[in-house]
Amino acid sequence: MKLSEFSKLLAHIQHSSYPKRGVFVTSVSSKVLTGLMDGVDIHQYELASESMNSESPSHALEKRLNEICADFISCRKEPSVMLIIDASLLISYGLSLSMIYKDVVTPRSLVILCVPSALSDDRLVSLANSVDQDFTVPLKRFKAMLSEPDSIIEE
View 1 (cartoon, rainbow, N blue to C red):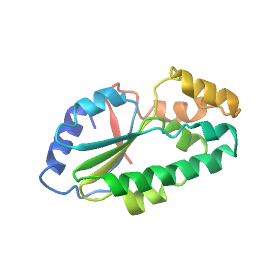
View 2: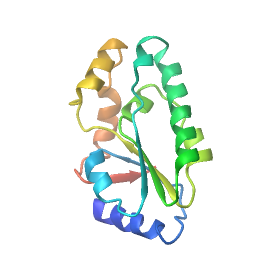
View 3: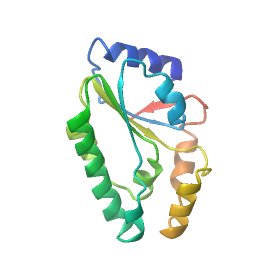
């Protein structure tokens, strides 16, 4: 799906429900995405946190994802979008997205997982080094799917 199609989808959920699961993966920047979302309640989150250095990364990420989901559920005003800007962490550690599918997504609440097209974010590079994790593998996996610069994949 292209950004223009996604923009139409966002306009659609302002007045009607979305009949599918509503989870999307993209390499489009969060800044560009939020610019498309007039009239939609946007909640932007980062998974990376300081606690990543003090406990098991997968446990810390699972805990953080649960916190993010709980916050979004309690604060959202539909139509709404939960935007996770460093979703490559979810992919790298193979975390389950069942909570997102079960509790977060509704016919008028979507989830967008942003996977950077390159590791240009200094925080991600620093995190990758501190937890000895190679983020290039999941990024390569998504590269073919996200080869168009403005593509959004429905999960």
